[in-house]
Structure formats: C-alpha cells, structure tokens
Length: 620
Image (cartoon, rainbow, N blue to C red; front, top):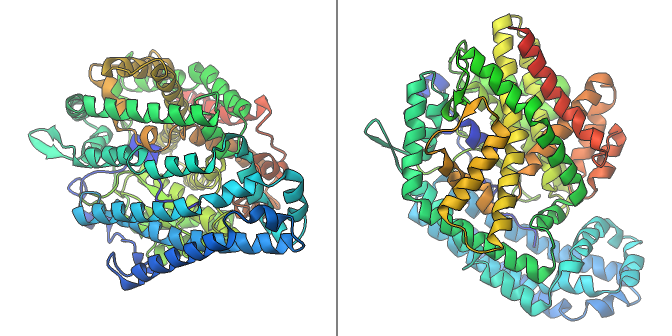
C-alpha cells in the first residue's frame, strides 16, 4: 500500500532551529497564529465515522482478497484483461485512499502532541490495525509482478488499464528485489515490533528529553532556538546543554542506530540490494550514478562553498575560527526584529502571486481553510512538514512559527510542498506521491521566489548583505550539510556491516564528516561529537537527505531557465508538479532543457551559491 503516516520534520527546519518554546516570543508580537482543523479528516479520535471507515475497509479488503487472490495471472490472460485488471487496481486504490485518510489523521494527531498518552495509543493502535489490512493486501502487487511481462504490457497498452501504466512500471521496477509472498508478509508484520518500534522509541525519547539551561529545564526546540541568539555566550551554553543531555542518552541512541542499520542490512541482503543506499535510490526512481555525480560535485565544491563562506563569516565576527555553536549565528549587523504572522503570510503569498496568481490562490487556501498549524506547543513535533494526506482530502502544513526571517522561508518551503501536493492529487493515491528527489522541487522553488522578491525590494546595502548571507547559509545547510549527512549515513551503515558500533565509533565518524564539510574556519569543540543523535531522518528515512541537495541544485537550474525565458515557464512548471509520480525525472526536466544525468547539471546549481558568496566578498 502507498499509505503515508506523516513526514518527519524538515531537516533544514531543525538545523535552522525554527522551533522553540512558547516563552521565547510573545504571542502578541506574532499576532494570532492558526491551528489546523483536522475535522476535515475525522471529527475526533473516538469518532464513530472513523470506526465505521475502518470496519468498511476491513470488509472491502476481505471481498478484494476473495475476488482476486491467486487469480491475477488468469485475469491477465483473459478476454477482458485490460478492463478487469483496471477494475482490480481501482478497488485497491479506493481501499488505499480510505486507509490513508485514517493513517494521515492518526499521524497528524500524534504530531500535534507526541507527549499525550492518548495520542500515542491512538497512533500505535491505528498502525497495528492498518498493518493487518496491508498484510492481507500484500499479495496484489506481488502477483501483478509475477505476470509475464509481455502479457501485462499488452493489457497495459490499452485503456482503461493504460491509465495505471506509470504505477505498474514503478512496481515492476521492484520485481528483482521481491521475495516470495510468505517472506514479504513476515517482513511487513514484523515491522511493527521491528523498525517501527525503534522509530517510535526514538520519537518518544526525543520528545521526553529535557535540557538544563541556566537552571531551567527546556525541550530540544527551546534550546535549539538559543543558537539564533545574538549573544555568543548564550549560544555556547546552548551547545553545552545539548551535549550534556545527548551524552547521558548516548547508549540509547547508539542502540537505536545499530539496530536499525542491522535491520536494513538484513532486508537489503535478502532482497539483493548491493549498495547500502540502493533501496532509497529505487524508491526515489533515480539512478545510483546520478546520485553519485551529485555527491561528488558537492564534495568537490566544499572549499568553494562552505569552507569559503565560513572563512568570510569568521572575518565578520573578527576571529580566525568560528566555534561550532556560531555556525548559524545571526550576523553581528543583523536586525532581530520579530515578523508578525500576517506579514509572513502576505510576503509568501505576494511572492507566489508574482510568479503565478494560480500558485498564490492554492497557497491561500491553506491560510483561509485552517490547513496550517503554526503555534509552538509543548509536545508538538519539532521543525516543519507538509503532509499530503490523501487525494480525497487535502494537505496539511505544520510549522513552529517564531517570527524570524528563517521562519518565513520555512513557511514558503512547506507551502511549496502543499501546492505540489494539491496539484498532484488528481493522479489518485497510487500515482500522486512524488519521489523524494522531485518532492523538494516545489518547496525549494517557493523559497527561492520568496527570497528573490524580498531581495528585489531591498535597496539598503547592509540589509541586502544580511539577506544574501542568510540565503547562502540556508543553501549550504540544504546542499553541503545534507550531502555531509548522507556521507555520515553511508559510513555508519557500511561500518555496521562489519559489526556493532560503539558510541565512540559513531561519534568519530560524525566528527570526521563534519570537519571535511565545514572546513578549517569552524572550530569543533567538545560535545559536538554527539550532535548526530537528534537528526530524525537517520532514523525514519535512511539516505533521505540527498533529496534536499538534489532539489536545491535542481531548483537553481530551473530558476536560471525562468530568469532567462519566463514566457510559458509557469505552465511548464505546473505541468511538472501536476504529474505527481507518473513520470521519471528525466522526462519531467526535458521541457526545461535540463538533464540530471549530465555532470554539468549539478555545477549550475552549485555555481549559483558560489556567485552569491563572491558577491558577499565584494561587499567588504
């Protein structure tokens, strides 16, 4: 099944420290902040409507199994193959959509307050029940993949089955790694007590952690926010606070990491994946060589990008080296004004509207119809995400808004996801989901539109310098830092294949990668070796992180096309987003004259960051 629970919080949000405690900013400074209305999905956790839907799904699943299990080969060779197979997929998709609605609701409720015991139980019980249904339906894609290629291709060449040809192509790509039915069922059912349980342990452990700062017990988000304070001593104390708590819990995080890495190795070995990241590349529908070209290009650019920028930033701070807690520190000349919610909304909608009134109209629905949850609350999931839910409903956006410039960019980022998800929804629940490599395109493009609008409106040289520097930092966090994270994951997973890793070994891998990517202008101090522990993507979505770099470089190339030939660009752009998961990245980029398989493609995106750094150097 393609049902999704909820997206893990945005890495960039966590790295930029957009979430914090409600005490950090007065609500009166921000104005009224919207909270999402989940009744569009279900009235409540104990709603009779939700239970009725679950019962109906279970009944429809039984009927579906009775009608199709063990019979797809015969149906595919029958006289009405294209119609009968299309009807089967429609029935499967209808169950997927309805079950996805329940899973989406439970995931969003859980994200609203992960510390609430009722939310946790509801989330866990829903997952258990949904896994049973998915286990019963597992036969469907497995049997489809056992149909002879020639037979299935003949049926899919004609309507109505031709509509599902992209989805069939996707599941066929997984055929070489498919196990027999019983093994697949065991893998699925054991995931509840296996990887799923360890993921949940990470979430609940992280939610329960408290960090001592000046005698006060704070959440992770509250301490992360201190890294944005203008006072360097406060930033140092924040780093020490994080390190102290991470060290106390290092055994737990090491055990979780070791277990999940081994769990993945077992799965990869049984399925026949040769490289630790191949399963991610497959799910992203991207070739390994394309990712390797991206990684190589970014690593080669470290000296021209991160090393060069942090040297410049250290100069602004009047030092030869920046302490690691000053990496994302506000610039000395930066104004720390609070941006009210209404101003953030108008800024993003204005930028979207300049590009296309259609884009702004879609984004406006998120504000007008309570599809956004913005306030910081105890127990609320940190960072930010956009959840597509299901095509029969609509997406939701979670942010932790504190009125900082980066919060505005995070809002623009997540609304880009939201617009993408709305446009892709008509493809249906099986073909609306977009591979991660392209899922970041709309979000990063939305950020770029917002940044460019603000920059164009800025005439003051100092303000322009601050904006450029902030954007460069965000792009380094999105490109350089995420490739460093990907490198860290690779080294951990490869080392785990030789045996269980100690905490010290994982910390050493982390420090090595960080020193390579950050460069000599960043002084890595004691305690930073533990900072790998709180990155959720390492736990929830191994090797996800290169998608951010992929998306950022892709958008930089797209934006260059937009600037040079804006006529007709919006129509091509919306066509790309509306395709959802129905087309390969090469097909989607072709109308723009772009090819991710060309090594020069990545240099276009990286050169944009370098040009911004050169411009900043010229402002000295």
